[in-house]
Amino acid sequence: MWSLAWPWMLLLTPLPLLVRKLMSPASGAQEAGLRVPSLGGFAVLAHRPQSEKLLNWRFWLALIAWLLLVLASARPERVGDELDVPVSGRNLMLAVDLSGSMDAKDFELAGRRVDRLTATKAVASDFIARREGDRIGLILFGERAYLQVPLTLDRATVNVLLLESFIGLAGEKTAIGDAITLAVKRIHDQGAVGDEQVLVLLTDGANTAGEIDPLKAAELAAQIGLRIYTIGIGAEQMAVPSITGGLRRVNPSADLDEATLTRIAQQTGGQYFRAVDTAGLQDIYRLLDELEPVAEPEAGFRPVTALYYWPLGGAFVLALLIAFGNLLAGWQAARDARRMLEVESHAG
Image (cartoon, rainbow, N blue to C red; front, side):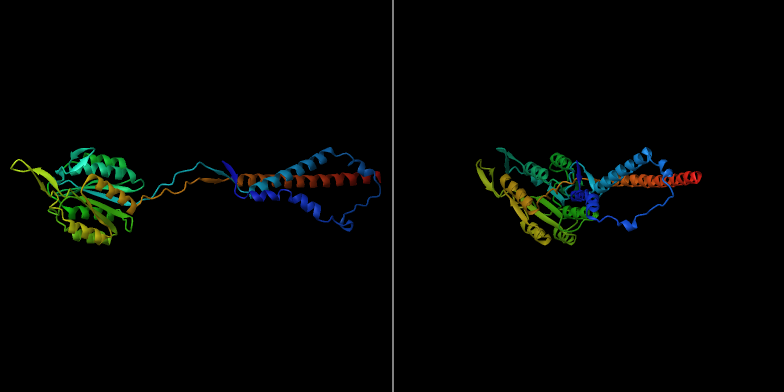
């Protein structure tokens, strides 16, 4: 698409006509005169079609040069197609517990009883799909913590590797402190600090393994500005068969260390959430979308290419031609004057 950055400059087009109309003509006293003893010599200059043609060409060249100069002053430009500006989001690490206790089937999904990890995968997958523009990393932890996916914009890969994880992959115990420390290390290695660093940690138990105390790891996270949201997952009660043949109700989340998870969140400026069923887990992830909103895409960018130098260059070339024409006209006038003097001298 072609456009003019300063279209109002086109109003200057009739300026030469206005100057010619408004300025007073030169006085007669300033006009040059040529005194000759006879008019015979002027017979040579009576008919000069070539000079008149040269004069016309200079006039039209000057007119075109002026129009090009006005067009250049209006700054013509070519506007390209709109380009999407990459959305700059936050660094979002997901830490998912794969310890043996995540095998407890106290959640429902699509009307059937499923284990905690299966419900987590389904809900977290939807959460990942919504985080457009964020760099997402995945940490899987059990007895040890492993970086499954480094921070990346490739949400599809993060989702696939999450769905491929399984209980016991990282051991049977739970190393919450090591998971937090690993997230701190990855964020620190990225050289990122500030409010755009987030860790969402989901677990169903307490810290029973690892080398780093969870609260000490939370201190390290606070130092680099890593905000931690902790999610405690597991139903509050569950009916299981008793030895007498009936059913008895138990608390499958008795090992969940809510106090430590709460302190971790508070220490880093995050929040602690409790998910007792699939609907509650979905609400938590939707709330996380509100607490850590996805970066809005910026307005599209259209590349602009300036083209004013083309008409400006054309005007400059025409100005050179006009100057050359003036020199040629002066040379012809001098030659004609010399011829006229020769004619007069012969006549004398």
